[in-house]
Image (cartoon, helix red, strand yellow):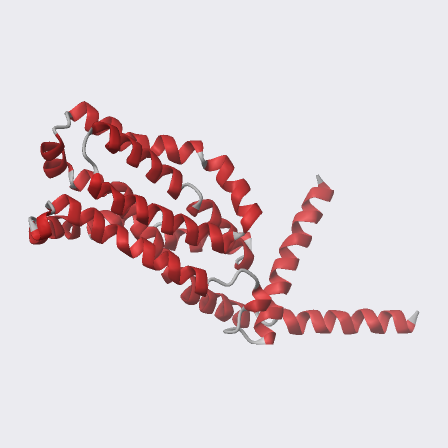
Length: 253
């Protein structure tokens, strides 16, 4: 009996050591936030910008393509049709091929579609490309949530998501003036209109970031070379503690 109690105490001591102090854990999650969030924030910024820049291009684009107000509004809204239709399949895709391929693949695909928008010739191609942009962006956000869930327990996710959502106001505050400047500065260059240059230059970063993510995203805690063994144990302990807490709550219910 004594040996059993001693073994239990030793296990508790190891668990406490692996979990670390509250200060150690907070410092670790600060490190994770600084390592993971900035890159994903930049990616989401360009995703949001490529979603809304059609509004910045409206005056030039609608005039060049002879699109009515109604046709332009329908085309802009078709993004959300494609985006919403693919939400459930996107969740399945994340589970099927993993977060890295989903995040990077989504960025590569929407970057190509955004760049391809410069080739819009009329109402039909405008509709098709806006729908495809929604389809290609659909898996990004579910994949990001799954990615964050590997590293952050749910009680810390709200703060992480709040940082991520900064991309939306930044997409307007920075993206609006940037898009206007691109259209003015590049208009007529190499025979392209300003709005065509805008789609090209704002879609290209998504392609480059997608390629970078394929090489840089770490899907498993144990594969993170930038973490010490002690830090990995602390993360595992935090995630295990959350799992046990959920089981206890379910049992009580």
